[in-house]
Image 1 (cartoon, rainbow, N blue to C red):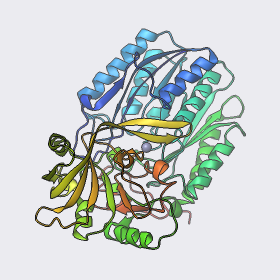
Image 2 (image 1 turned 90 degrees about the vertical axis):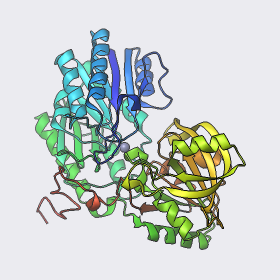
Image 3 (image 1 turned 135 degrees about the horizontal axis):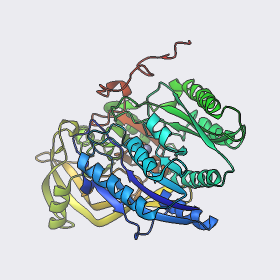
Length: 503
Ligand SMILES: [Zn+2]
């Protein structure tokens, strides 16, 4: 099999104040090595194992942010199509995408990409699409491809495994061994669902156990991306069945999707994160720590509302302000995006004591800047985070980082000190390195605050004495009913308890 792979990858928070431009997309060009443990490497390894030819185009990825600029999107789409045409003839095309990209004039950028690729290659070439579970699933996406496989795990530790499965599915279809046929069901649900705890753990395990029997090739739950305010948002269940094994493949796929979608919906009251308010979360953390449960690690608080990975600025100051006001001891916080403070702190050097105006620069959802009395305790250029995956650790560049020991507000610097990691590059906490690289021990006497919704959990969950999800103010309000949605169809849970009306 001779195939082509390229993609455009970002998740669009349509409520974010920051446009996503061409310079925000980092390209992995055909001549670059595929990032370790990611989907591109998985496609390469699968092709090599099969003795196939895989031609790589450019795959560009941007940190989630606001709506992608039209010219940026169209420029990347043109390049993808030109690279595809240069690689033709091909038997198959693999598209690693995100699934929740919105560009100016394009609510469904992925559907648009897939449609254009189909126009170029014609009806007989197999197209396989690999996306994040925080996706909007649309008819245009399904109509244009042969098979679509979505990550099952959140944190996303299974990107490579799902890419390998998709490769096999498309290769089987190309060889005529199967005929992938897809069905979709709108679960009428919106929420954020980690897959580590029950009942989601059991649901994901059950999906995997059902694959390979009764003509089912693949099951995926698209969780949806609540901060992408588009008509097709929300959770949807996708089934891929083998049209050669079953009668009336399309009807059967639709039935399987509905059966599994309703099975998921029945869990609706128990699957989503229920974050505490900021004050309750901090109180809880202090209480858990005081109970000294014999845990080996710190109490971990997720500042979900300021997660760069969902499009927030990650420079909000609400939590740090509250910690300083309440003089809570032993806190460490990562990572606040403030390139100016990084610049100033690096220039001053390790050991310098100075005043900085930190964070709160990107608008009302970031809060006010804080004038702080700090000591520069460490500098790390080009810090790399290692994000635990199924078979390794995915390196993620975190920019130039500085460790500030914050003694308090200017004029009130009596402590207790707070360790704050400031970065030059907007990004969420994925690994332990933002702390450990600076010698901040993750011990039971610490309260660690990470700007992340759930991806922190792969590294921090195993060591935390408790993980506390927090709904501080911010751009990624974790309570669904407080997101200012205007275009999404809200005839779904949690706005309506039983939108199917069969209770
Ligand atoms: Zn995701």
